[in-house]
Length: 375
Image (cartoon, rainbow, N blue to C red):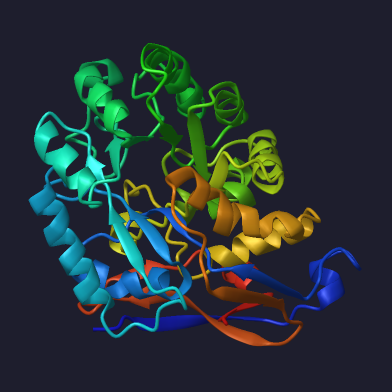
């Protein structure tokens, strides 16, 4: 069942007010983009959100932190079937919709099963979560060193490791946890198994960007919300639970480093939205679940960032090409057009699932300045 979209944000934005005069074209055409990090959830939430990704992106790297987590070829196949069923009838991109199911790094993984699935093209990556770091990470590891045997098998067979790079040591400041994990955990692993390809997921700090630059076997995904917001947006004028995510949105200097990397054309960096829906019942309360749902308008947010930094010539590399090179897939055949429009628009601000759960949509401000059309 399609989600019910409710609430509107109305904006009338003059072109000159939205962008410095002459700094960006009003029309940008790019190859069909891919999303190399997305949470589609399961059950009715999957039904509600999958269309947003399928309509915009060709490949979706789907995270495995379900309950129970995805740790076998059978579980991966069953989840893929649920995704394709939920996406049936959705008008997808010109290139179609290709979900990749990530495996959850766990002692439960049978390496024979993993290698066979990789050979069949159904197990391309494994994701490491530090236990307790984020949503449904209770089954995660207490350290990368506990999985060296698994990682050696992965390196031998060309299976990439995805890493949620966040220390869970309580003495580490929340804004320093990415750097602490990279220094204490990932750097030793990269030195021990230099053949292991690694993606630092949702990199959020200048330290993370530097780490990728210093480690040729590493790539990184960057999210729309980490590119477009900083911790002042999260905290300065009252806590914004809809901006709370893990790793947390960090300082303006960190945001600037992310923007510089994303807009540079460096092939080590690509778009991973980390779109992670939670109902408002889980976001507004004594504690807030970590996650930003940006699948609806994330592409407009990224286009806005690139336009404001006079880097629209690098947008296609970041959202459409770099990930293809990192993951060894053919470039997309379709095209997508983003147009800047100085017109009044009405945008949904949240969706409502079949049983009445509301999920807030991130990026309505930027989406009021852009329209996206598949060619």
